[in-house]
Image (tube, rainbow, N blue to C red; front, side, top):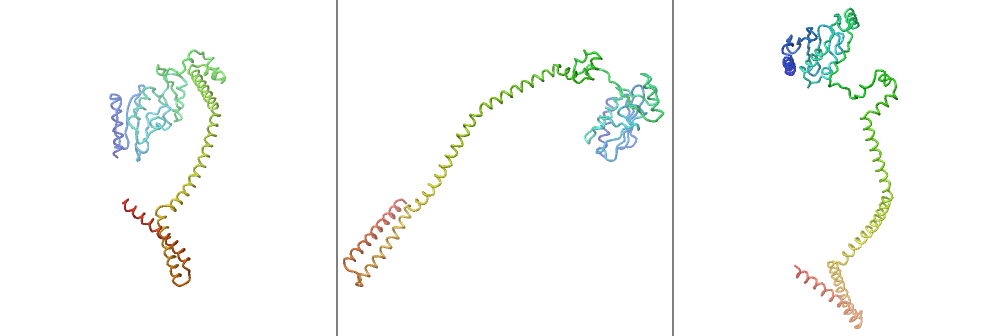
Length: 313
């Protein structure tokens, strides 16, 4: 209900402000029905504003009285073709919609159904026919020609009626006339310039095609060479890791330690064989000294490595 009151209050505010002397708003039923009275073409008129239960989600219903001939009004006197009413949304201002309808009727006073028109007998006949049948016939009123409505093509003002008819009847002449218009000539010139620039750009791109192919071939060769070098690098890296693990100082020291242990064991075994009479003196001296030499050299190298580690730390 608050939204309804807001919209109809806005309607009263706009209407009374714009037409304080000629427009009167009467509240028939609060938030449901209102009557807006005004004058148009020397006739007293009124717009009945009915707000549906879902207003403003649903557009209001506007009816005009007395019965008139107007493109916006149907046979039941309901205003249906007003732009503001056709495009009505929850954000629309009902006051402005009613105000626009009143301005339309004031600028182009509609013909009352059943009343003879002063402009022509044909219009009077339409009014009488509508009155007798109870139906309205829309009367399209030609708007007054104002300076703001000067046609966009002043060249048409220099043509006679016969020439205008020829333009309407012949598409070739119409196309020829349009192509001679300054805006069309400027547009055609712009299009021609763009086509010329596009062609020049296309030729320049085509001229660079061999160079691009050459660069592409060179890049592909370099990529192949890079792939070979990368594979070689990966292979050498694996070999380096294998050898570095094998010949690392720690690995060498451990190998020497094991060799010394084996030499000691062999020398003890040779000594036991000699003491058991299983080996001559010459054989014993030769084998025993060889094993002890290996054991001594390995022990000295291992001791040197340990000393170096202590010095480092």
